[in-house]
Length: 403
Length: 230
Image (cartoon, rainbow over all chains, first blue to last red; front, side, top):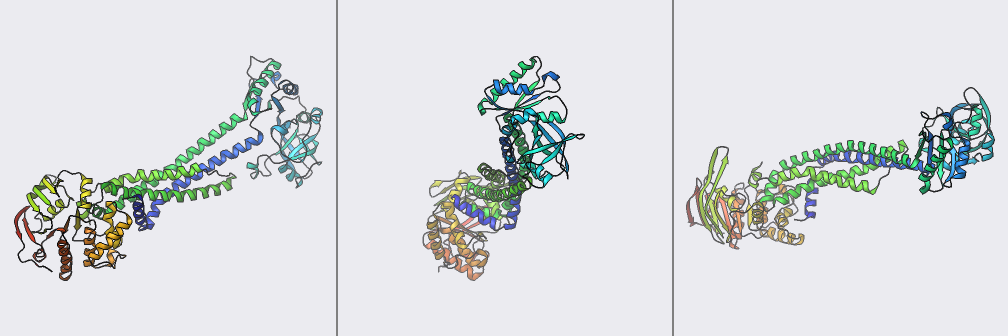
């Protein structure tokens, strides 16, 4: 009695009850396909997030001033940034960011704008890709000139075209705006969300932090600073050195006001959260697999009862307990496996379909494929054992008499 | 060949005990053709099931081919059914989804023979019962007599030392009964030991020895004097 013989027998039996076999498989199909699509979308989502982060640069450190504990004298100054770059060898770039939500308007249109006051280093730290023109330079920063860099979405919104270098728009607070010259157009950064961007979303504008100070008539009060180390390995050290230097310069060792975060850590955290979330939903989907397994068991029990006489005949002509057991077990494993394979196909298809809607490229790894097939076999074995044992233990005489 | 000593079989259902075999001793030699007759409920089928290792006796000894098989476990009994015993049933008991050829091959699947050998031996067995031409049909496409011939082919295909036939002609008409008995007699002439259970006296006439049973006991054991020989 070999495996091939068993498989042939099982397939014959499955084919003799096509509709019933299919309905039995359906539970497994739904279970496997939902687990596969969820997991591959989850992993795909993680990859997308990692990709977005890598664009920004994972060797970046963010230093923020804890506003709750900070006094005015604790805030980072332009002089601090200059000193950090000059004194700490590990630091390659350092850029402040001061946000303001204001407005930007052309002759035709006025939109809410996220105004990012920064310096030229942000260009490298954020890995901003310029489509047209250039980024503002150090001179323009120091002099606080009215030059801005806008993103492509904003350019199209204001002028209907991407290449708008040399044009002027008005930027500023809700109460007063000033003319500023567009010197560069960047590629829209958050591509992942760009298809959700509509006219209601604020446009993104980079401008010298010094000019933002002028627009809002204020003294610079930098609470957020991005640093990029010369290499990935020096990232941590650069962060610590920068923090120490800020503490020394501001003389606030007694108060813990500077928070240092590495984007790498944030990325890990986000990926952990997405991972947990994916695992949770997959676990919920796996319950349907369990229900599918119970369906397999149910049908196998019916099949054993229906074929009691067959079992009796087989035993009378010499089938051992193990032969009968293996015969029914093979049948349930094959049903589950075929269900698993169909589920796999539907799952991958579903993942790509949903992925297209959500803007995520699903990641179907060989592991997912192997695990799902293996798991459906395990379901087949687990839920097949009881019916198979029941069949194998039938008394041959009783089974032969069964009508 | 077959030697049973003081075999008892008691069925227990709840509090009720039913003694089907009340201490039967029997000796069947190689090449014999034995009929067991008796009214329903006399225990002849039970005896047949015990001899065929389908049922376990309550007490007694069973020696088959010189080997004591009284205390064997299920799988060992299955092995004996597979290699030493061929069953022919009243209701044929063919597997409906399989072709005739597959039905005849099945005992050899459990005996672990190769596909090629199975095919050769199945065809030879089917030829022996004059059914070499319908091998691709399924049981529901052939007549009762043909079904029983397939069952006989299946019974002999593993070259068992004994064939046990439980009312093999019970579902067949007189003409077909003759055909089947001719085949069984032929097998016996070729050296196979046959034990046949029947309640028809004229079927028993084809055998060499007749055992009469009543209430779980053998009441008569004699040679068939007016034997019909083809």
